[in-house]
Image (cartoon, rainbow, N blue to C red; front, top):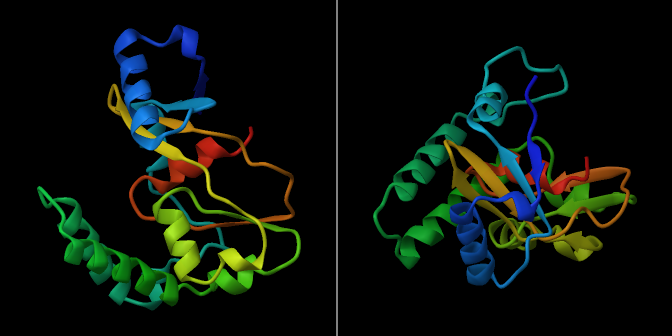
Length: 185
């Protein structure tokens, strides 16, 4: 199976380096790690197949999840979002998190758990869901940049410590690659 690749800055093409520099400047950070998910890797991650028995799909129990996902799609395709659109987006996300069979705040409060909530959306969601006050949380900058049909993910630091459990709070679009890039292989 293909795997994501950690890229070194010295080997970046000039146009890729410019993109990384622009994202770092815009988000006032420095990406210590750049992980590339090429098109083939992304396709393999999205290949349908049987689900493990311990995976539960929220929309199977709550058809309203699909309705809220339609809200994301509509808002993501707007040429410009207004404050009211951002509020609808956040409310739709909070609604989905409320329908999950496992609640974030109670899961994050278990001793030995580390919360990962990437800036900005993940952190805001974790705060709104009451998960941040329980213990230290990790809120890295983790930004996705298009690259040759795939994604380059810049992460400003690896997971800071070993953990018995992880609770991950993030938004909807390409969250999986963002979180995979943040975990130390």
